[in-house]
Amino acid sequence: MKYRVALKNLAKAVLVLFLVTFSISILVRWLPGDPIEILMPFATEEGRAALRAELGLDINVVQYYFSWLFDLLRGDFGVWYASTGDGGGVPVRSMLAVALPRSLLIMLYTMVVSIVFAVPLGIFLAYRAETRTDKTISNVLFAVSSIPSFAIGLALAFVVGVQLDLLPVIGYVPFAENPSEHFRSLVMPVVSLSIGLIATFSRLLRVDMIATLREDFVTMASSKGLSNMWILWRHVLRPSSSTLMTSAALQMGALIGGAVVIESVFALNGFGMLLTTAIATRQYLAIQSLVALIAIAYIVFNLIVDVLYAVVDPRVRGGRG
Amino acid sequence: MCCTPSLTHESEVGVAKGRPGPLGFYLASGWLLVCVFTAFFGDFFPLPKWDEYDYDNLGLPLFSDGHLLGTDYDGSDVLSGLVHGARTSLGISFTAVFIGSVIGGLLGIVAAYRRGWVDSVVTMYFNVSLAIPTIVLTLVMVALFATPNVDDPSSGWPRELVLIISLTLVIIPILGRLARGSALSWSGRDFVLVAESIGMKKRSILRTHIIPNVLPSMMSVAFLAAGVVIVIEGGLAILGVGANPGASWGSMLAKNRGELAITPHTTLVPAGVIGLTVMALNYFGDYFRLRIDDRESRI
Image (cartoon, rainbow over all chains, first blue to last red; front, side, top):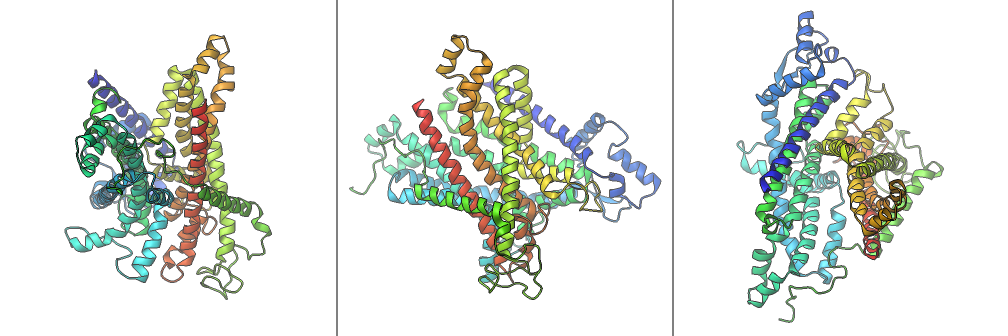
C-alpha cells in the first residue's frame, strides 16, 4: 500500500517535470526576436541553416522538445554561442562545470549553517516557551525572517567588507586553489542567505517542539528521571522535525532564487549569473537547459524529503501522518 | 531547581505562535500608512524631482541642506527617489497581488467546486508553475515580455507593465493553490453538509458558505505575497531587469550599488526601506491570520 503511494507520487513528479520542461521549450520559442539574427548576425548562409536546425526552428515544437530532451539526458546541454556572432561557441556543459559547483556549495553551506544554528535555537526557545526571553527572541526572529537577503548582503558588504575591511566584497576563490580564501570569499554570501532561514527554521521547530512536549511519552520520560537535555535532544527533536524538513524543502526554491541575487551582489559568477546572462543574451538552448535543471533539482529534492519524512518520524510510517 | 522550567506546558494561550505584540502591529500599520500616503500624494511634497539631476550636488551625505537624505552619484535626491519609488514598488506589488489573487482565487475555488478533470488540470497547472523558483520564473517572463527588439531595450511595453504581468503570473498559482485547499477544507464542514442536505444549490453554497470563508485566509497570505513581490522586484532590479534606473526602491539600490564604498546611504537607505516594508506586510499578514484562527475556532 505504501509503495503504491510512493509510486503515485513519483509518477506525479515525472508528469510535472515533463510539463515544466515542455512549457519551457514553448516559452523559449516565444522569446521575442529572431534567434538567428541575435546569435549569429555575421554567419554565413550555411551557418544560419545549421543554427536553424540546431535550435529546431525548422521542425515543430514537439519534435524539437524530444530531441532536446534526449540531448539533455545524454548530458548535452546545448551550445553557448559566442558574442562574436559568427556561429562559434562553447558547450553549456563546460560553463556549468565552472558555475554549478559554486552555487551548489553556497546552497549547501547555507543549509548546513542554517540548520546548525536554528536547531539549538529552536530547542532553547521551546524549552523556555512563554518566558520573557522566548517572547523577545521570537519577536526579533519574526522581524528578521522578513528582511530580504540582498538587504542583509548589502549591509554586510558595507560594514564588514568596506568599513572594517575584514572580508573580500566580491569574487569567488575555489576550494582547491586556497581553502581559507575560499571560505573567506563565501562567508558574507552564506551569512546573508542564512539569517532569514535560521529565523524561519527556529520558529517552526519551536512550535513543533512545544506540541511534542505535551505528548505522554515526554511525561513518561520525564518521570523516569531522564535529564531535560537528554529528553529534548533524544526524544523530542526527531518527532518534531517534520515541519522543519518540509519547510527546508520549500525554502530550496526561495534559496535558489536568493542565491541567484546574492551571487550577483557579491559577483560570484555562479549558476545564477549564468542564467541571467543567458536570458540577457538570448542563449536559447542554455536558458532551456538551465531552467530545466533548476526544476529537476527542486522536484527531486521534494521527493527525497517525502521519503525522509517516514524515516524521521515513526508516526508517519504507522500511517498517522 | 526553582529556575529549571518544566518541560510540559499546560497553558494553551499564545504558546504555539511567536505572536507579534500589538506594538509591532501598530508600528507596522503606521509604516504602511506612511508608504501608501506617499505613494498617492508624493507629487505634492516640496521635494526636488526624483529624476532631476543636480550636478552641483553629487553624492551628498545624509542630512545635507536641501537634500534630507543626500543625493546619489548623479545628483538625484534620495528622499524624492524613495517617495516616487513608493508609488512604483507598492503599485507593482499591490496590483500584481490583487489581480493574481482574483484570478488564482477563482481558479482555485472553481477547481475545488467542480472537482474531476477541471481540478486535475488546474492543480497540475499550479504544480508546474510552482516547480520553478519564483524569481527564475519571473526572470523568464520578463525576458519574454520585455524587449521585442534586443538591440533597442526601450522598445516594447513599459517596464512596469512587464513586471506587473510577470509577477501576476507568478502570484496566481501561489494564491490559487491556497484558495483551492481552503475551499476544499471548508466544503467538508458540517454546516456545508447541512446546507447540502436541505437542498441548497451548490452555487449558492459556494457564494454564501465557501467564498466568505476562503477570502480571509487569502487576505492574510496576500499581505505576505505583497512582501514577497517587493523582494522579487528588488532582486530583479539587482539582476538588471527591474524598473527603470531609480524608478523603484529596488532599482534605486541596484543603480547605486556600485558606489557602496563612496555613497553607502544611496544603497542602504532603499534597502532598509524595502526591509521595513516587507516586515510591516508580514506583521499585517500574521495579524490577519491570528484573527482568522480566533474566528475559525469559534465557528
